[in-house]
Image (cartoon, rainbow, N blue to C red; front, side, top):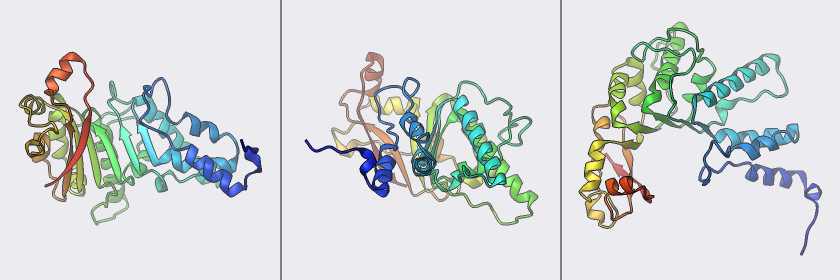
Length: 284
């Protein structure tokens, strides 16, 4: 068996291998709480400055923020980068250029210092200056119904910043794909959010929506057997109710998870069975 020390490889090839190895896998069987998908890449960042520069873009490609403490930690990192940039420090790194997907999970409670009045002005505390540009530069955003306040706060901050700078033209948002998760019980908050000026302007720029929403109507359609893949002609592809009233004027396609199981989804839920699903995309 042929073997040789990793250190004998050309630097370019070694960095290429490390870059590939640093890519986090989000399809792991372990929970994110028990195993951090970024752990190996973060360890590689400690090897050297050159390795850190190579690995950081792979870490930032998909930013996973499942809990409120992850959001505050990410914002602390952004503030540190602001300080590095002001000092022209060798560790400065522009996150905005590399974040392509950002997912905010279902927080239990609000973020410290974040208080929104009907998804409008920030009342106190949390400074969204570092987060807003990074979030709104990502082509793909995923948000839970329970955390619309954070997205709305960033949008309001971006709108206010443009007004303070006397920039008259409407804000241009980079996100074109929006994934929404949560339950039907939280759709009232969504309805309030869509009525805000900054919320409506943002949604008008979205061309693709992925709905991972558990609703009573979804359950009913599964119980009718109209959502599983055994008969393609019976695939249920009507846009969810929460989408129909939203100002998604640029929407071209939407995606829904369709179960492969021949059993109604409600039966699988009651029995605790795992259900394989396929994410299918439909034209509007």
